Length: 365
Figure: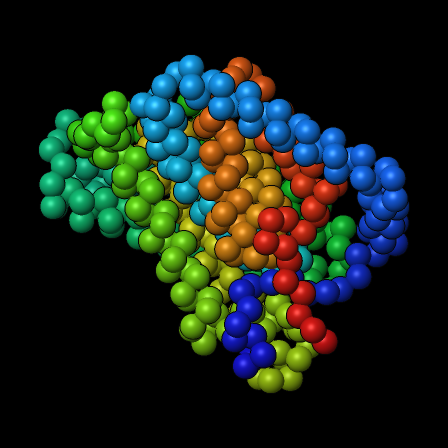
């Protein structure tokens, strides 16, 4: 476990199999030589052209509009970062893309919306110290229930397939995602569900931009949770066990680490963040829908890959950047193309830098 002291949660260096190796060789051949140089040059030209176009739009709309969009972007990025952290933690420790994670996020939004009146909160009530404590209780209960749900998913659906071929748990994850999505459909129906607007609408003006209380609460909450997770993984005994298991599961087992307990704890912590993210999404947008986990989960997965899946710092940075790309494109360009741009970023990252911004830290063996 001492060898894991300075490394964040990272994936293991196992082989990718016949198909994965073929893809890697093909990509390496494409990037090498004159073709690779033309591709790199083309990417630089595209990015430069986009930045120039964005700068002209920013100058047209003025600094106040830019600051307003930037505030929305950081708030969106904070929510995506919380979801992306769950993806990257699970992948880092068992190399599984838990597609059901996005639906746990959506479940958190639905559950917290149902708990708000139970805790005595409402839209027509003033927001003070007692309502703030009640809202904190909603956060705690939602996060714990989401954690128990995710641990149950791991125990029932994933653990029996831990030594099966990789395709089996992947298909199971997709099936579990559809199962949860169907359960949310039966619970709340196909229409958008109104989320109670319990946060104060007050704010302040900063250089012509209206900075609302919602944005501040979302940004601060996301920042606190990300920092708390980073400190936990870096300094706690369980965090060291998680990093050791991610680096070498067999060696960790020989050192006395309970692998099953460590993996279950990883699912639990990831779901805590998803539950908090779902609650924050509802409080911020005041709406949710049964397939929210599919759309938000795909964007968050893109953020995890963008930042470097398997790296918790990369996931946080990727979530922030994807939130900024989404908000700036919605604000300055045609919003109908936003999803196209986000997934184009995913494709470009997979082609030009498949390890992401910070890269996957593979341990030396």
